Amino acid sequence: MRRREAALTRKSRLSLDFARNKVLYLMALPVVVYYLIFFYWPMYGAVIAFQNYSPLKGVWGSEWVGLSHFMHFFNGHYFWRLLRNTLMLSLYSLLFEFTAPIILALLLNEIRHKFLKNLVQTISYLPYFVSLIVVCELVKVLTGSGGPINLLYSYVSGSSGLDMLQQPELFRSIYVWSEIWQRAGWESIIYLAALTGISPEQYEAARIDGAGRLRQIFSITLPGLAPTIIIMLILRLGYLLDVSYEKIVLLYSPVNYETADVISTYVYRKGLIDNDWSFSSAVGLFNSIINLAVLVLANAISRKFSGKSLW
Image (cartoon, rainbow, N blue to C red):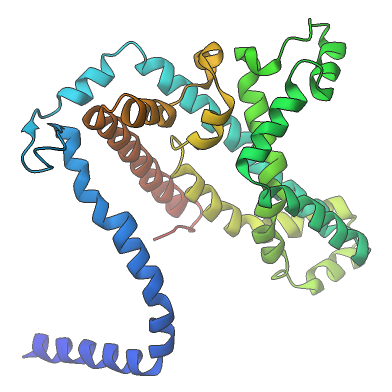
């Protein structure tokens, strides 16, 4: 009886909530439909990772091979190179690209001249709206033989001026710094928004107590940003192995595969170029499972030690 009453109560609450917020539900409907069609419905296709998939036989008619594709990948010649390159690029990005928007937001927050602040913000946002293809071509021109960055690097390091993208040891640095240039301004918006939630009275009290700007940053600004930083870090860790393949594909070549080839580009080559759909699905599924495990672990650690988490 009590369960029935509780169920009726929940149902009535949901009905009342929908009646009050039906406009919001209707606005959210296209987004829900989009994710159902393009993110959840295709998940059933992951079963081909356990098959020798044939388009003629279809998903359910293809031969089942169990974990053979996973074992082939784990025992393959490229497994450790792909894992190392993916982890290195992810850690480089986490160390430099993730922190760059935070530092930029802190610097912008210290600019008191409104026109100058808006000008710097606008300039820092612009690269985000440039096409990725254009950005990659700019990188190639700037780092190629005779490019200004290449000339500067050659002058400082005393190198021969060879195309920088043809030097495997430089690929990670070029990739990460180009990502910072393109994304730091845009990603700083969320931290600037979080800074507006810090009460100005805290800064006034700190100034009365004799605290300088640097002390205010460490005692007020960073603690105020901490919840946002933690949430963004957890989300970022959920994509630890999911290095964007589009930019790497546009920049890399067989010459720098040694440091540039990552799991996502390997999936691209095996799936779309070699037409080995089952094997590429197995590699992609492995990548997704690791990302999910890291996300859950990071969320649990954050909830235990800081009290902040996604769920």
